[in-house]
Image (cartoon, rainbow, N blue to C red; front, side, top):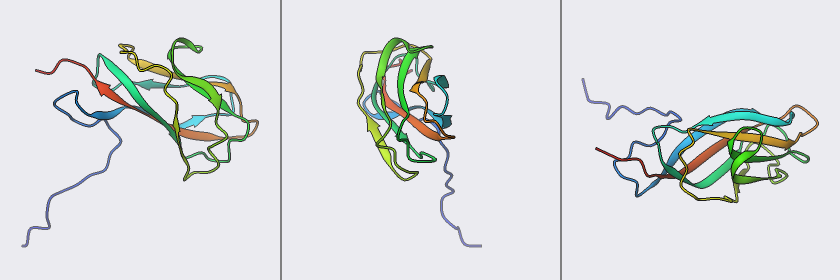
Amino acid sequence: MANPGPASTQTIHPSNLASNQAIRLLGVATGVNVNSTGDQAVIAIQNSTNYSVSNVVFTNASISLTTAAAGLFTQPAAAGTGVVANAALSALTGSTVVSQRTVASTATQSAQNLYLNVGTAQGAAATMDVYVYGYDFSNYS
């Protein structure tokens, strides 16, 4: 039997890196409700105790988000450090649109959860996905 080549899989998980010299996926939330105000997603930071967020991407909007506004924070109820300020999501006009958000704080964080807070609801059933990327400053052995 011929070797069909290396096995491959696709999963949404943090990159396995052996140093802090590369940006990697720190956390993800899919199917986030943007039609209700308040904390709508808790994004668990994966495999890092000390990190700096460099990029936050919102994508896969179920409808055009003409009204909704949201931000990303280190504590519930839009408290703590505002990693991404509460801002309009109007750039998300469909499921194929990717909106890279302005990161308001690249300060080193140790919070193990980030909170996506919707400040203004869409007014109709709507969801989106959130991806958080950054530098992992955890100690490696």
